[in-house]
Length: 320
Image 1 (cartoon, helix red, strand yellow):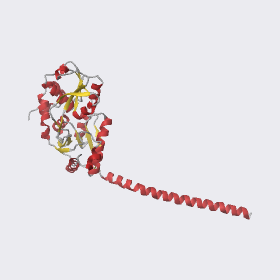
Image 2: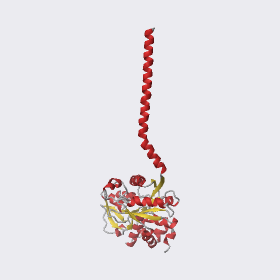
Image 3: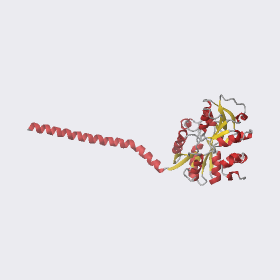
Image 4: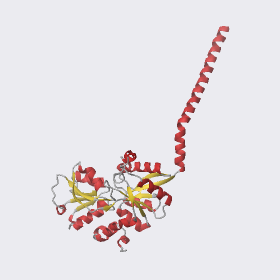
């Protein structure tokens, strides 16, 4: 009997020791886990206290490319300003404009045409312009075709299939139409379409679906090695503006400008920061004003009504 009691006592003792050990281990584990979570919790608390700013972008490329190229910019702005910047892609150019108009977004990267419309409709303001690889505040529209297409002048495009980018695109629609018009080519001389994105134009031409097409320079350059060649370039276009509404918070605008004007790819500290940015943003920014885009308004007025009246607000055509 005594032997059985001793065995039972030993078993109970072992159970108690195991329970106590497990409790201590679990308690230590919780403490370690809590300690690991503290920085994350503090960071989340800080982020929750920062105001969210929605940054809109017109649909220059397909959504996957857009997110890849612009989300790193949002991460930089969230780190360098007292705000959390969130990307809000417009499915169309019009949606990006309307989002800014109705304060769904508080800032946007528009094109010259969409900014001009925003200015006319609701008094939008251009606050910054992007710089190109040469540090200048302009870019160009390229007319491209396949390298194996024989063409000696723009006149050779007459009767051919041609792809423009979005009808609201400055470099993919307005400027190339103007360039063709100045060279004696009217829209009725072409079998043309408007595609949604710049990259869609390049792909369509490469596949032979269209004999030629128009798109912005940075997009065209990324496809030259794949078989495109440039057959014409537009005059310089004021680079893409960063735009806010007329009653935007001055503190937000100031913080945004300070962060973006500081971007300098020549400085070592920015090398890794901008490496994944869109090519129109990675070279930095300069100050901008609404007057920079008067040339866009003039071009819309000068081009034949076949382009303009169906694309843009009628009061854009009014003379100053």
